[in-house]
Image 1 (cartoon, helix red, strand yellow):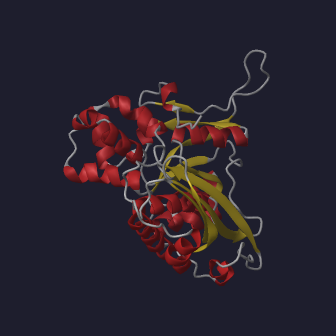
Image 2 (spheres, rainbow, N blue to C red; image 1 turned 90 degrees about the vertical axis):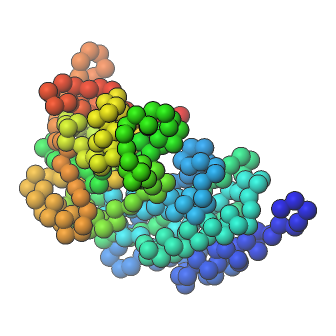
Image 3 (cartoon, rainbow, N blue to C red; image 1 turned 180 degrees about the vertical axis):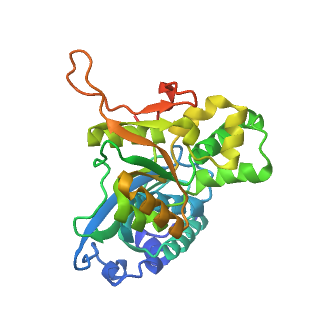
Length: 343
């Protein structure tokens, strides 16, 4: 846009984002704040996640897909809490080389996904980024009072379930950054496209939220890899767990890649970007949870069991809550208990 005058922040809001602010509480985005009342008998559930170029997506990615990913990673968290989403706040940090066409694509992607997931924009902020595009969304949902499903509530004996399939997004990233390695997996075009799409566009399991709310003792979404996120659940709950690597649900593409390159197991368990739900369910509720998931059309797979924390060894005085991953022969695979860390 060299030689031209860029629109002001107010112009950008009016053109691209006011059409997305359909709720009365958004006040047409002409106020500094929005207002929202929880329905009687319900609590607010709040979550914020950010995505940044070079960390969660590539700078050359379609801005419509970036917008949809930013919204969906937040919706995924609400699904794991058993919550019903209602709306969100958006902070958008634009790089120096942004174009109006990019912003139009961004708004179109948001509009498509908020319509699909019955949420609305309540407000936000637009600023200049010193580097690449950064998108931060703060999402709001509701649950019946006192019913939010927490992650630090698992108990010994609970069965562990995950939704969908694991490792697809992380393998999609490997295929994009290391095509020579991916060529050895022997995937066909549709399988490669599946992995790529899973990285670009998560599938928040909102349809599973009622089952989680009704039957899960503890739950969280898997964003940083099963190994790391399960360890967080165990640590917060004061328990540990055992997971069978052979029980992990894989897509056909991921299964073929892993068969060709067994070292990818660490990518499957720790690559991150799954955005599936990890749930701990009491044994007596397992059948009802599975039936509710089937009714919702969401695949769930039992992958292991929560166990009592192991007795402390040495002078530390604290029990170990590190989950144990075992192969088909019952051998422990500590390298599978990994995950993505920002720092």
